[in-house]
Image 1 (cartoon, rainbow, N blue to C red):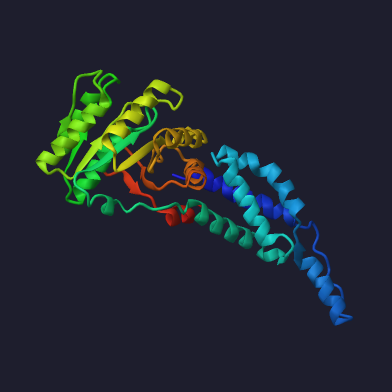
Image 2 (cartoon, rainbow, N blue to C red):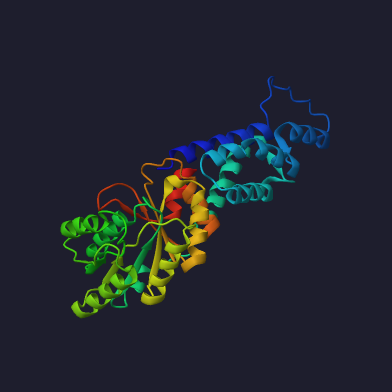
Length: 323
């Protein structure tokens, strides 16, 4: 899942280490012990280094492209650089310990970057019925993610119903019905071209009448620049007041994840994220960027095509895999 980013981070560690303390071609002879103070100074000169802020800036100018290639946002790169400065600039460090110290700084930084606010889904689900509305671009994997979350809810002994709020994309209702058949979940739908706010409203009423725990509402894929569709999304939220607005993002999108989320957030307020196709994208930087820059709760990572392929977000596990 994170092979590319892991490789790039390890390359960065090596590059920083080599630039700060390049290996000497010939082993320098230790001076004879004449005076203790003199000897200690000489030994320190050969075994310890003192790194300047300018040196770190110079190094990061060279390695920034490595991190950008791994879909790490500029803001996240700046965080890594500044944290490294805090830990090594102006301090005497043994050359033999330098690489280990840099790795420790990176690990600490990654843990901080991946640590996003948490949502207790089970607490959210205490309300009956709970309404989750799924948002996102075309092809981000909203409908499949809905089905996976339905499967996850069923594993918690909770009932659910689908609302076919995507009444525009051809075969979208049929796709949702196919998932419904496999999961034994009813689908509330209108005709194609119907008002999605009304479809979701009817699904909530149905859930109330049938004592169903959760309504999972699909919506049409839309770009954040399409004003009419964003206005329609605002109406869906205004009419139905969802308990959770979940933005589903394709992890292969790269750094445009940041723009997507900010635009949807400005329009209707994004409560949480699900990142899909993390099994296909081995770069991993998009997850790091989304966590650090957006500071939105990440509920799940999509890791495959089956209903079981939904991994609960664990920042410590990701940090361990990266460093």
